[in-house]
Amino acid sequence: IDFEFEEVKKFLPKRDISSNKYDSGQLLIIGGDEKYPGAIILAAQMAIKSGVGLTFLYTKSQNVIKVLKQFPEIIVFDNQDRLTEILLDNIPILAGPGTLNNKWTQETYDLIKDKQITTVLDAAYIEQIKIDNSFKAKILLPHEGEAAKLLGTSSQNINDNRVTSILTISNKYN
Image (cartoon, rainbow, N blue to C red; front, top):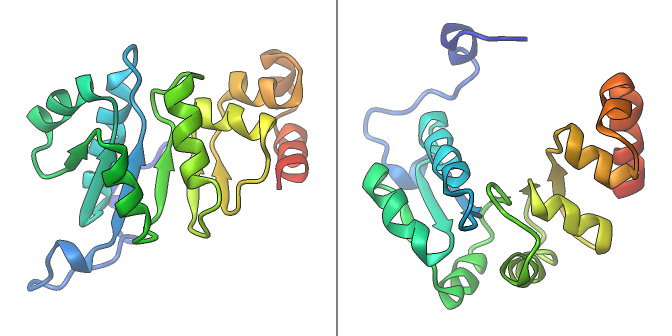
């Protein structure tokens, strides 16, 4: 289903004319491996367009300048100590755009999995759920290929049985 902005606009909260970035929510985005910096750039763009007031982005060092060139209003960093500090604020997380299964992903996954804050998982972070399903508060966004990996089946089977697949993933991975 495609929606036009005018259809969605009525569901977006109205901002007070005197509001500032601290009044409009926060988001922490984690992602961006060497091969896929575009995924975090798109995620950052969507955070801005959807009205997130303050967006933090933890990524690999080679992506910091790429993101800042397009979105100087985003707080972009590559320091894990800074990530640990921001995690103390318990802000919602989007983890995984543009990630691969590697040490960086595993280390970051381990830092966030015990947080009691809503976390949307994408890409390699979804695959981590198959290995370690102890994540506290999660929302999974698998495409057919990721769903197929979670259920040990083919993408075609997922596509042919979308509702059953969704229910199976929901039951199996809470």
